[in-house]
Amino acid sequence: MGLKGSCLCGEISYEIDSVDMPIVHCHCQTCLKAHAAPFASTAGVKRENFRWLKGASSISTFESSPGKLRHFCKCCGSQLVAERPAQAQRMA
Ligand SMILES: [Zn+2]
Ligand SMILES: [Zn+2]
Image (cartoon, rainbow, N blue to C red; front, side, top):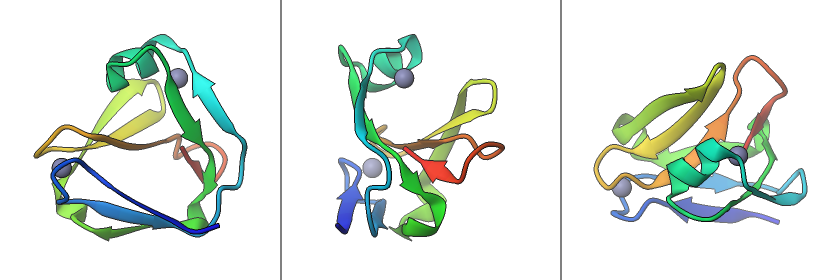
């Protein structure tokens, strides 16, 4: 199952080839804050199945907890993906 996504302003877009792990609705404190929502729905994707299509230079990164990087658009502030580079090869 392939899927494309983009930020609110359209500056950044990405593509995934498959959803490799189940969709979860995360209620952790940093997801609530990062998404300004009562929970955040995320699915894990293996890194080799994920690629940025455009706008890579507009990505800003915030380390919301040690080792966890949240990537967002520096133009519109949309949350895009989070990853733990030191751990399993996955993006969420
Ligand atoms: Zn944007
Ligand atoms: Zn969370």
